[in-house]
Image (tube, rainbow, N blue to C red; front, top):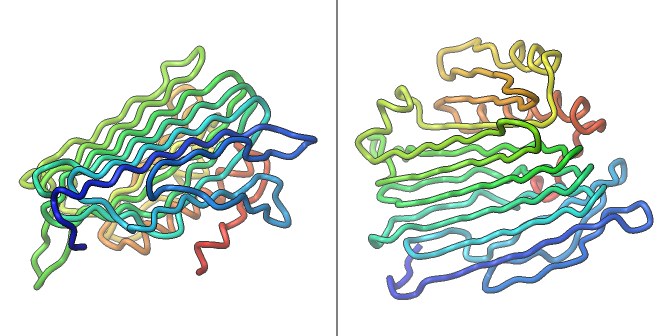
Length: 274
């Protein structure tokens, strides 16, 4: 992606959801710059609206910023995803930044299931995700991160990535997770792998944990994985070398977790098939 270093793009998007006559609807949609949604989609067998976050430039370079703020009013629901992978390109010395803030009021349901993030060589990127859950809120969230780029049989890594997750829950310790690594540290910190995926689901229990652990038990050397339970937070981590396999595995975990956490089977967003 060629772009003059002085041309910096800022994208801001505010989304609010409310329950109206038994249906979750998008009640506020304000955007600045090339970051927006067109409308909600309602699958036939699911009353949770699917919302596609659109970013026409297709990627970020140094200095670019995407800011997403989402608020779910009491008893509302939403599934948020992206039509394709998010790409972070070579830096001009500045960080490409993505900040996502999710506020879940009482008895709400959120699924944050974006497609993969791909970090090209010489990328400098920051991604900060914050989830604030009130009583009775439910959430499933996952992300797949691709850190290595194979060129002439040589694996090239980003210059620096700083990925931070903060989950704040009433009457719980919550969850804080940070992965900050520079170019020379990737191989060691990722154990030679270059695809990383993480999923968390709230509320979860030991029955869900056992099912997930059975599913992710490695059957080949191209990946490793683990699952744990922190209070009512299910945390799943995967490392691998096959992007497609890791992505499919995280989706299979979603299929298992969703009926237990949300009470419904998964409905794949249609935009993933386009």
